[in-house]
Length: 275
View (cartoon, one colour):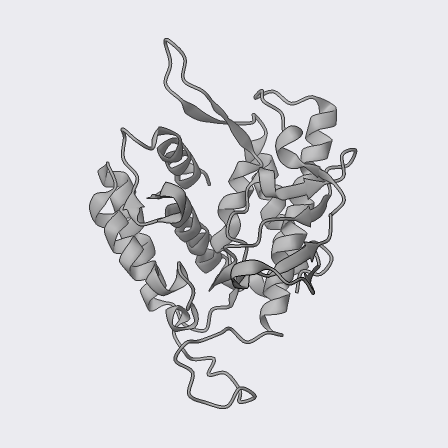
């Protein structure tokens, strides 16, 4: 599905102890985006042009997942029909999400709606919970599990995306769940100092860049125009799941709090507050 952006892998015929397997992975071209993104609000003309190309490239990547959703069947642990039988398109969205995160979306949102540290955040989690439980006939696609700048490779001069790495946590989730990744392209963390708290800061032109993303996405996938409200809600779902639940070395089962998760809460509030 993502052959041009994901590294190719192949098994190596090696005899290893303990039943271990060895794989060879292709090295993708490009530079980690983390090394290139600006760390100041006001952008130079050159940085502005590069960010525009980056956002358009990101929109094209997201659009590809929508197009690909019509060509793949999502896995199901409970499937009883033949593998070559047509999928029932009237299944509710959640029944087609069978991975670690997907199979526990309702449980996670319930925890967030009860445990997030302020009423506004809890209300947003409850709204997402209600929306996802009602949703049917909505594409479930392969989502990257950690779509952040350190996993995005770009051409250094243009900032067009050349590769996406670290697919270990990828799974089938509602289309748009990984759009938390867009917000990571539009700003940066300002660490705490002696006089200030840690904050997330958007570039001065972030709103225009976000608008450019949505314009390009709809241009690439015209069918999305009728479902933009649902897509935006799934974007909120992704923000809540990725920044409202603490990572804790892969446990991902604890709601973030003001003491242990200052950076995640700063991102959560900023991303949910963005248009």
